[in-house]
Every structure is written in C-alpha cells, then in structure tokens.
Image (cartoon, helix red, strand yellow):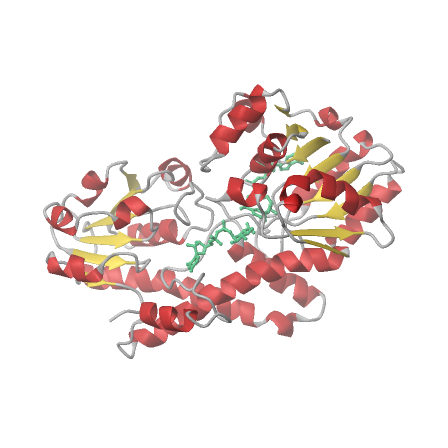
Length: 435
Ligand SMILES: NC(=O)C1=CN([C@@H]2O[C@H](COP(=O)(O)OP(=O)(O)OC[C@H]3O[C@@H](n4cnc5c(N)ncnc54)[C@H](O)[C@@H]3O)[C@@H](O)[C@H]2O)C=CC1
Ligand SMILES: O=C(O)[C@H]1O[C@H](OP(=O)(O)OP(=O)(O)OC[C@H]2O[C@@H](n3ccc(=O)[nH]c3=O)[C@H](O)[C@@H]2O)[C@H](O)[C@@H](O)[C@@H]1O
C-alpha cells in the first residue's frame, strides 16, 4: 500500500518508519526542513529506542523516503495526519492550526478513493468538521479517524503491536475500515482487536484513555498526600490495592507526577471542549487531577528547600533526570525540568543530568547548569533530587555517591531507590508518600 504520513515528530516519524517496516511504500512529510534532512539521512531527530534500526532497515529497502514537498503525497492511497495539537497559548484548549493547515495542504493532491486518516489527538467534533472540508474539495477522498495510543520509549513496539486499533469512520463508509485493515494486516493477524466506530467515539476513546491514565496517577498521588500526614507508605498501599485485578498495579507509581507532550495538555483540552459543549461539570474532576499533579512538583521543591536549610542561595542541588519519563529525550511539560527550574528560581545552584534530555533542556532553559556525568553532578551537592527514574540512576551505589556529595540528603521523587540501602549508607532519604 502507498502511504503518506504528514508530520514527522514523535508520532509521525515512528509511524512512517514502522509502516515501511511492515512492507508499505511510505513518504513522510514535514514542514521542518531540518527534521526532514535528518530523517532522510537515516538519523532520528529525537531519541526513541528501536527507531534508528527500523529507519535504517526501511530506508535500505527503498520503501521509505522523506520530503518537505507535500506534492510528494500524490499516488498514496492513505494519508496519515500526525501533526501536533499542543495547548493553545493562554487557554486550555487544543491548538488545531497545524491539523487544519495539514488538511488544507493535502486537498489539492487528493484523488478519488484516497483516505485521509487523522492520528493526531483532537477535540471531539473535529473529524466531522474536517470531513466536510474534504468533501467540499470535490476530490472524492474520505476521512477516517484512527487515534494513536503509543507510549514514548516504547513507540516502535506499540506501533508494530498495538493493544487495539480504533477506526472512526463516516456513516455508511464501507471502504475506509477495510483499507485500514490492509494497512494494519500484520497486527490484526497476530490478534490485535479492532473497534470500528463513528468519528466522535473514536476521538473520545483517545482522550478518555489519557484522562483515565492521568486520573489513576493523580489518584495514587492523592493517596501519597494522605500518607504523608499519617506516616503510611503509599508504595505498599499501591502494591496492596494493585493485587485486586479490577484495579491493577500499573500506573499506580506515586511520585513527582505526570508530564509530557500528551497527558497534561490532553486533560486540559478535554476539559475545555466539554465546557464548550455545556458539559464542563462532567469532567470537572480532571481539573483536580491536574491540581494534584502540579502539587506533587511543588512538594518535591518544598522538600528540597527544607533539606537545604534556611539559606537556599548558592547551595548546590544535584538533579537526576530532566526527561518527563525514562527512555525518552522529551522535556515537554516535564516535572523533572520544572523542579530544576523552580529550584534555580529560588536561588539554588542547580546542576542537572539526564542520559538523553540535556540538549532539549538546554534549548529551553539555558540558565541551568548541565552535566553529562552523574559523578560531576553529585560532586559537592548539598542535596540530591531524583526526578526521572532512569535505570542508571536507580543503580547508583549510595556508598559511592555519599563520598561525592557535601551533604547526604536525597529526595526520591519517583520512589525508585532502595530506601534501606541509602539510609544504611548514611543518607537522609525522603520518598514521596513514604515515612
Ligand atoms: N508523542 C506521542 O507519544 C503521541 C502523540 N499523539 C498525538 O499526536 C500528535 C503529534 O504529536 P507529536 O508527534 O508528539 O508532536 P511533534 O511536535 O513531535 O510533531 C509534530 C510534527 O508536525 C509537524 N508539522 C506541523 N505542521 C505541519 C504541517 N502543516 N505539515 C506537515 N508537518 C507539520 C511539525 O513540524 C512536527 O515535526 C499530537 O496530536 C499528539 O497529541 C498521540 C499519541 C502518542
Ligand atoms: O497520547 C499520548 O501521547 C500518549 O500518552 C501516554 O504516553 P506517554 O506520554 O508517552 O507516557 P506515559 O508512560 O503514559 O507516562 C506519562 C507520565 O506519567 C508518569 N507516570 C506514569 C505512570 C505512573 O505510575 N506514574 C507516573 O507518574 C510518567 O513519569 C510520565 O511523566 C499514554 O500512556 C499513551 O497511551 C498515549 O498514546
């Protein structure tokens, strides 16, 4: 199948490479010439495990190419739209300008029988509006909405073997679903369930899934807040409730909270859209989910300030982690970077390290000091804060680390370290929601 992918960011670049790896003939399009130049050279513009390998192998077959020229989509049967839908400036709503621009740029190149397939996360109602725009073009192309559920850090795996596929199609459209079945034939053959539904349901499935995940994290972080005033241990609480299959242990890790380019902006956009629809009260709890989440960042900052004593100025704080989660270089709305910036704002001499996210962090916050070396980061520190649970941080030997710092105080913002081992090495250890 000939496929185009419009927008080659964290989602689109992986989608394009994975579709080519599955045997399709793919062209990836982006307006960012630097990004396209890198991709065309076989170099991913961001860190994503497994992406370099599939990019190289798919390009070697000649089935994958990249271009800034939208006219190159001509001849493709399926056009995936994977451009960004960030939070709009000064509002909680999603910024739809990139999706609208991408669809308009496609219109002159569409032919009868083509399907435009939205993958971006959009406010419910967008697909119906865009279907009208495509119908009015007279091209004969149709629209389907096929939301994406991949996780950064596992993006290749999730694209090749998704948990489920959701197709939102127009009433009476018999062909879009069967074409998408062909696109995803490999996953479907290995048992991936497919839900074929209308546009609105498909759009809502996506934001509902992210809202549920965000709620689960904020739920356990709310329990952490209660644990903090009762000397209970939220990690044991999570294990104990997680044994109940109806609850499940996944996404019950209390800590500095969720971030990234999706969960925070998606729950805000959902709230804004529900308010527009006159149903703000139905998802009003998502505001509290957001508030709980942001309070956890503040908690880590407060614990660090308390550890530093009355004078924060010029005290060295070693920040372990910048990415919003391990196995990613993404710092969009990263709790880790936020904590580092807040501590710097309070006058601390912050030195931060991360295996992959230093470059992206420096581009946004050049005022922070960065080091690629954990040893350099820890040396002479008055307090250490772990905010992204990279395996290499969890493996730090507390005896070795105690020999580097000035004061052996660690705030474990991800509850990832072995508290007993750190205490035994002479550290004052403070987790979140733990005694
Ligand atoms: N990052 C992720 O893990 C996931 C993202 N999503 C959704 O996918 C969408 C894209 O997200 P990301 O890939 O993270 O964003 P991103 O910002 O990494 O990538 C978006 C890309 O679109 C390009 N672009 C913007 N306007 C364009 C246009 N008119 N024509 C061609 N290219 C254009 C940008 O240059 C950029 O490279 C968002 O709606 C997001 O919510 C959904 C699931 C997972
Ligand atoms: O719409 C999207 O873009 C994607 O958003 C999330 O994926 P992602 O943002 O890559 O990362 P997650 O693994 O969901 O983690 C999100 C945040 O929650 C935090 N988290 C996660 C789990 C947990 O128990 N506790 C917790 O604080 C992570 O540290 C991270 O900051 C969803 O998991 C994907 O299914 C979805 O496709």
